[in-house]
Image (cartoon, rainbow, N blue to C red):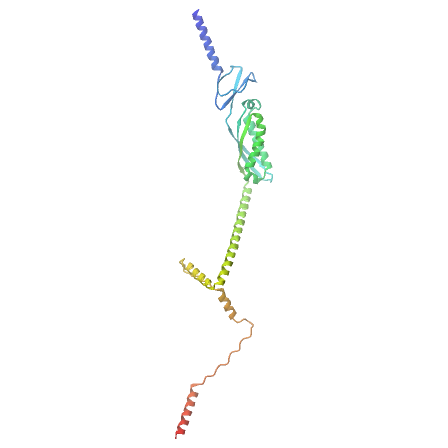
Length: 290
């Protein structure tokens, strides 16, 4: 009798161990468990830790509650200003309701991926090329709202959407490069013109000051000569005053003006005539003495 009781107890214990082993489930900290009993949702969401289900009747499905990083495949589209581009993005989302993620949608990952691709193509068609290149923050917010609206019914929350890269045709890249080069050239010319204007004003002020003190021009000339000579050059350049050129120009006779008549030459007595006069005077003096 005792032996039969022991055998029965061992059998019950073994059956219990087998049942516990078959019914035992472990839900990790970043997961939530959804129990389907004969195809119907049973109770609430199972929290992390150890839990039991009815073997053969209940089916436990675990849902990852971590943030999922999903790349969106590159999408070809035409912008509002008729430029063909290729845009790819990345989406960050997480499950906030494990029961809805299992019941409301067949595969929430695939559903979010398809919604992100269609929303990205829609954003491309509604935007200009300049917005895609420089105003991405606004486009990211619009893309996030477009994906988050239907995803809320699936128990999924969109955390962030980022546009990664915008690929342009080679012809468009060359055109943009020429445009940027022309714009930089325009700004360089404006800066040079502004510098010339300021320099001309300063030179005009300097000329006004030097005109009041003529010696300042000579000092400036000497400073220039010293500065040029300090460079150890074989050629020394000296500035030529413009006033001297004007003086020479005024002194030169103009073509077509009446020529000045030459002055008559002055006659100078020849030395022989002077000696003849002196000899005559000496002869006259001798006669008077006699």
